[in-house]
Image 1 (cartoon, rainbow, N blue to C red):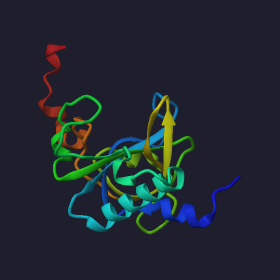
Image 2: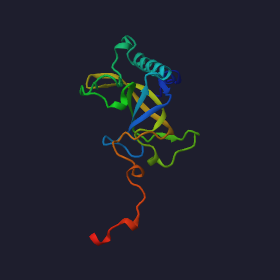
Image 3: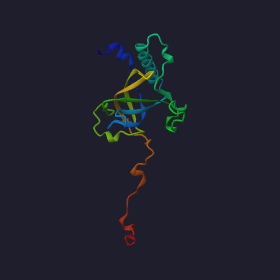
Image 4: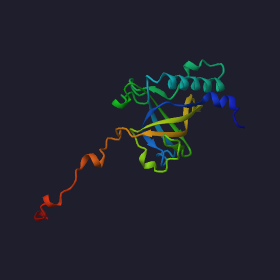
Length: 185
């Protein structure tokens, strides 16, 4: 049975401008899911407020007698150690809240004009976007909480790559065939 629209609308959020990391939107990741990690500036109180409200609504929809502030969520502080392993997040996460969202199917992706983005190779870690996320509860082997499911993305603009890889344009200048010493070959 489908969820009532009222409950679904309480758990769906469209973010403000975020930075993308670990972008798997062209092909699924190694777990067979499309996913993206969003770095949300802590200064974006509007987006963070909407996310927290949607997480609480999802929690209360499933567990009406449980204090939603005590529910485990997948939104984490980039200035704190990662809950998964206690290691620090990367420097790009400082000053941000971090959330990973997934989908079993490829999200719809548009550019900043709202037109379908066809060249998904252009969307990479470090770029900026907005996301539509639906928050739902999970209960896996007694591990309970609220997570985000990726609906759609809006690509906004390029950012400094986060994959540790330099752009070819930045590594190489123009090649001068006259300077090549062919005698060495």
